[in-house]
Length: 261
Length: 228
Image 1 (cartoon, chains in turn cyan, blue):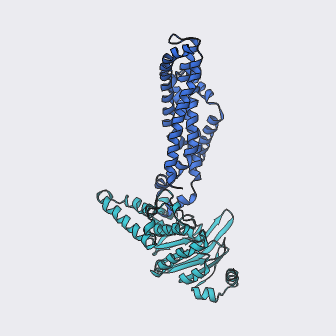
Image 2 (cartoon, chains in turn orange, green):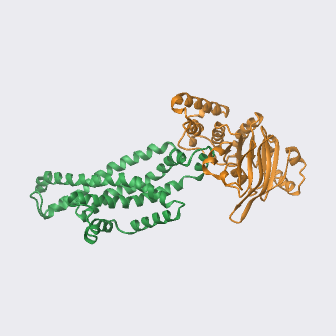
């Protein structure tokens, strides 16, 4: 059974069609890589999944529940969108850590705020906060940042910031974790540490959608690859097939440009 | 010189009383204009057209005309033209009118600084909050607000120091602040007349008070240095 199904997603900004009838699905525990040149609509697709953009057409389904249907206005209500977003986690290209909080607080904040809305929060406050703190520390430890938890973002390297951002997204235990070019804003020598962490998550069968320009990584980490060009899915399949034996001429040209540097 | 030393205690006593009124106007203005400025800032950023243009219109009027004229109109217009003196008589009426004018005037200036501060926080901060399931309210209070405060401390410090000196404009409606108190010695007050030095001496009060404010605001700026 597919955990995520996107059907006929279309999105335009003014007159520009950025997404043209995108359909794909993702199985639980699998990693999907989306590749394609800049401006092909990859990032917009991720932003649609996370409700940062509203598709003009199409349906988004998670665990067979319709989260969004362009035809059904009741799925667009701001109040319900907030809860729906929690099915997804998003790691941004530029981290977007909260600068005034330490690494640990960055990871804890959203869960704390959600916990404060629970009916039993007042009674069990100490217990709940302790639980959240332990979880956040475990996540930072898992990201190799145990000794950095009290640092502020500006005291961390780009790679460390991005790993905090991944821990922050994981803290809410999303069904699907999305990465929007997670290494594009990093110095080349720092990409490795971030890619390694994502690979580990893939090995633990975290369900992921990864938009990336790192071709070797996409091929290595993904169970399924989508190649997008000009707002459409040109080709999709298993990494071996897409990378080694692309069926489409456009895929071939794109991969050639990349492998030649 | 000897005469000035003789007059000094009397003058200082009178100036102190005047400066108390200056301080009162200063603090009341801040207390009123801080929140009102935020309301106007949100108004001018509103997606609701009429509110947005109304806020921008008010800011244009207030920033586009001298505070002194605003004081005169606000104080005299209700009584002299509308024949409904809403401010009441005496020093308390003058203070009320002055406080109203200053709060309105400074709120408009603050609103523009707030707006710059809010819009200066990268959109990615809000988006990160949204994808983490936060409400817009939580995003404002837990994420945006402190980053905005950090951004606006330097320009706000500037306005606050200007406000200390601007309070002297209330002299125009005869509010008995420190300039009024100093000037009184020219015409005659407390048995001293024809003395202009008390008026000049008021500058020392402004200078010392602004010195203290500069130190405090500088400390606040450094306290917010722990993040970038």
